Image 1 (tube, rainbow, N blue to C red):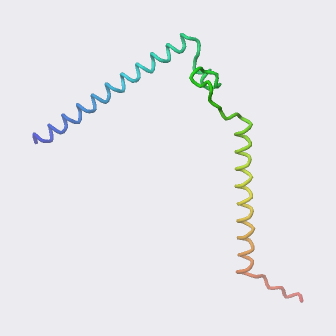
Image 2 (tube, rainbow, N blue to C red):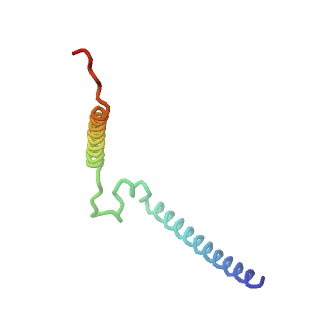
Image 3 (cartoon, helix red, strand yellow):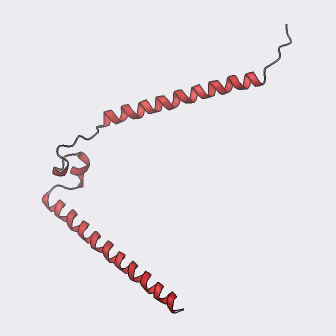
Length: 102
């Protein structure tokens, strides 16, 4: 029984330490966000690609993304049509219709 209590105590101490670490990280992130707001460069600048930390990086613009997603959609649709076409012909080959009019 004493081992179980010792293990439980060790586990709760580790959990308390991790909670304290998370609280410290949260407060430091809050401080960073407040400093960024006070400096005038909020989160909007980060998402627009105009923040000083993002200078010199090439962000992918919307036109390129729409081209990539459009190409992906075309490939998916064409593969689907090809698969259904082959499936249709395989079913016709497996179960041919018998014409009796001739």
